Amino acid sequence: MSNDLQWTPLQHHEPALERLKPFTEPLSPAVAAPTESHLEEFASVIENVIVPRLLMSHVHNTRNISLKRARLDADGVRDFIELTMGEAPDAAISFVQGLLDNGVSFQDILLDLMAPAARELGERWAHDSTSFVEVTLGVARMHRILREFDGVPKHMWSQAGAGRNVLLMPVPGEHHTFGIRLVQEFLLRESWSVTTRSVPKVAEIHKIVAKGEFDVIGLSLSGETLIDSLRSSIAEIRDITKSSGTKILIGGHLFMERPELVEAVGADAYAPDAPSTVNLLNRWACDMAASR
Image (cartoon, rainbow, N blue to C red; front, side, top):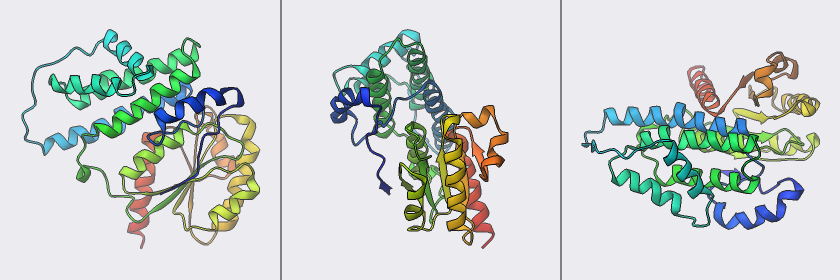
């Protein structure tokens, strides 16, 4: 995996983010403020990608699961959020481990604790009741928990992306890359080879795309101000990959509100969130294999 998406926050957040780096790197680098929609997407990944795989794995799992339950209520969610944003780096992990030790299944923790926590963090961010640094740290810590306690056996993750290469990048000029991080994480579990890049200008796309043979190139955009940059980027990619059949996917909530833009900018498809991106790319991979 190649990756050069590094810390590129808004200028007035830079000192605070530098202080966060020891807590978040290399677990889940935060390159821009997670927005409310990004945190909703994080919760959606938990509910629509991870938990279904866990439930599938339990069909093949004959272990007896304790019926003892610890309460996962609103107070527990708030306590968990505070731990993810606190000074003790392992406090949230210890909290989750305590739940597991008390017989709570990992999928219950994901559905009833982490997904609601992500959504509440998004609401706090939207209402400016929690700082940029706290939200960023909370999300990074939740990413770490996903890695530490991933209960899905490797054989239960799809192998659809095996031998397939995808390039993920924000549109030149775009600073929000949280969604790309999510997509990258779960495509890797689906056996895709994932490259992430970030360039400031459309003219620099050529040297990236020309270097590799990508089956899919995904571009993300958070707002309408960079539509022209997106259109120019896609035109540049088409010119380079016109004989290879490379698919171009775009993401961002803008296209949910204005679906007509998908065709207007020249993309093959739009995916509204990380779960749908993973599913769409896996379908494309299967179609590519079948057409050989």
